[in-house]
Length: 326
Image (tube, rainbow, N blue to C red; front, top):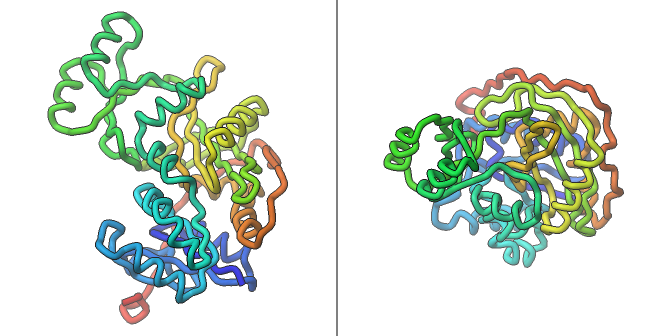
């Protein structure tokens, strides 16, 4: 049996539903969250309420669930937990559970936007200019290397929290006084895209890439998008992801400016827009299950239909007090 544990399931009901559908009677989907009103846990076969990820003993509790439920593979849906899972990889593997996540070092790089900028530069991949020293930014601006507007954002962060588009030196000075660990990023005046990518856990090969043009965003996630293809970009993504050593699911944010591709952020997890890929036949849950069952996946990069639109809309779930997990 293949039992899969989805951590910090939150509102990602679709991911839970897709894994349940693909797994069928071959095993169970178990989900966790620190809240009993996280709707996704009610779509799982079984669910557990756990402490917040920063609590003492959190990993011990997750390991306890893995032993009890004979979990084959485990992954998280939130950024701060990825490094934690990767850091304790050996403890999970000792009890027969495979963490479906990239290395600790890669998770840390992805969480730190400036370190990702440095990695992309090292790989000679186009990306927006970034500065963590405001004085260096002011010098670059004076030299004509960058101009307003720019984005000021946390060096480590997610969900578009505390991101500000600024147009003056005074705004930069104010934000750097209010917040710590900020960075300044060049404004990309172009079309935003996203790529859902899978790196085989066994072979390390990039086996699938799904590219979408983002039409509308909400709270840092893709709300409306259309599927597109670009073979040259596919090859660039494949080369980058494999050379870095990513494993499992990764989500890449990109921009196209004046006909050129720029990489932005890389998240080593399912992206918020993953339902678009699945709806177009890019079956990442099946790839995960095949890997956990000891099988390599075939390479099917770009194997989907172009021009398919995704439109998110609200759904609701109801539970009585006695139906909530305690």
